[in-house]
Each structure stands twice: as C-alpha cells, then as structure tokens.
Amino acid sequence: KTKTESFWFLHLLLHAAMTKRHFCTLPPESGHCRAYVPSWYYDPSTHSCKVFVYGGCGGNGNRFYTMQQCQEVCCK
Image (cartoon, rainbow, N blue to C red):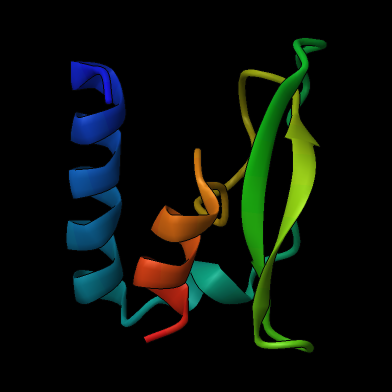
C-alpha cells in the first residue's frame, strides 16, 4: 500500500466510526472528472461490495480502493 492509500483508509475507518457508516448507504457516484479509477462501493440491498468506475474527483464516501477496505468498513 502507498502512504496515500493507507492514510485514506484510516480516514475512512475513523469517519465510519463517527458517522455509524451512514455513507455506506449512499449510491455510488463516479464524480465529475473523467479518469478511470476502478473502485468499490457497498450495496446495502445485497449486503455486498461491488465494483464501479470512479472519475477521480467528487463523488461521496461510499468509495474504496479495494474490496477488503469496503468490507472492513461497511460489512461489519
């Protein structure tokens, strides 16, 4: 993992604890930029993490770099 990914993941864990994972219920948002960043989001209707394409900026907190990060934050 890069330092940026580790920082982002720790930030998400802290945010999840503080908001009781509210952002895990948000729909995936690709954002307003046009990059192609494969990412993961939690789908509360199936209680699972799924892949989507993030555009690189904007979006919301229901976005993770790996399936494992998504599961650790939203599936517990």
